[in-house]
Length: 306
Ligand SMILES: NC(=O)c1ccc[n+]([C@@H]2O[C@H](COP(=O)([O-])OP(=O)(O)OC[C@H]3O[C@@H](n4cnc5c(N)ncnc54)[C@H](OP(=O)(O)O)[C@@H]3O)[C@@H](O)[C@H]2O)c1
Image 1 (cartoon, helix red, strand yellow):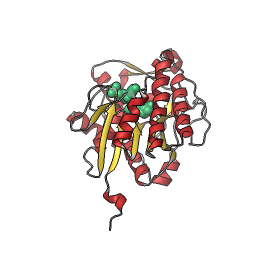
Image 2: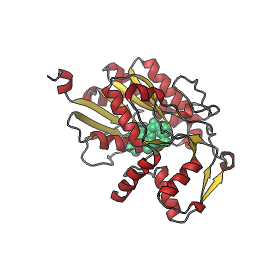
Image 3: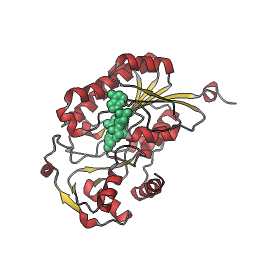
Image 4: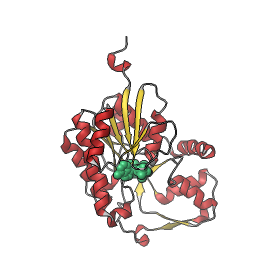
């Protein structure tokens, strides 16, 4: 016998469906017969075919209310954000509006209808002095993007909504449309014989985007709430990450040059010794990160198809 809950389709609202993570989430859920999907993003049009799409600017409270109250989702997944870390330093007002107030709007109306809000946060809420971090470590952002991501987490917690906050770092896995992810950028740069300078002193555990998608699905399935780190299983510098990509894709490694973060003179300071410990997700939802080379194998096939 099926329970009534199992017979009813789950309504899932994907916010920021045109983004790098948003597109992979849409791909994962769009053909699932047990899911009724609505995708929303800031642009007039969706980047993918065959999905029900509406334009939504999450900073517009009335619009958020209208979409959420009309669709009445069981789950709202927020993959929308102002993600340009350096631009956050100079465009503080708009980055706050999107990352904090926009998230607050989603939390308010998800709370109103008792929907579960799944929100993506970042290791940039930490200062990068003592990573990798657990879910219990004390946040201390050192740039404005990190401050907005922490404030977004706090506004979710204060709203009373049922939530899962997923903290992740260095998402990779190319989306079909839009900007190139790190892997595609390294491949394209080297193939066009461009020299790339990559930092040796920023340490993270890069995260294959599909691992976040699967983790989100498990969190929903196991009815989990709270904060979960979802990240890869190897801590390495961006420089070493680029070398691993070059090795796998048989690229000329001599074009990858080491550099220190301070030499880049970026607007936003970066957490250096960062990364996220995923033991909680491993024990509670059976999370298992895809090994780097296995993820490259998947990416290779996809890049050929695109
Ligand atoms: N990328 C990383 O390395 C990384 C690391 C840790 C955490 N995260 C977090 O993961 C999440 C997804 O990141 P991502 O790399 O997939 O981001 P992304 O590719 O930059 O996509 C973000 C999407 O947000 C949408 N958006 C922006 N402003 C909006 C607004 N006012 N209303 C509605 N939608 C809006 C944009 O939609 P349109 O395209 O339609 O304009 C964009 O496609 C973000 O919360 C990010 O902070 C990312």
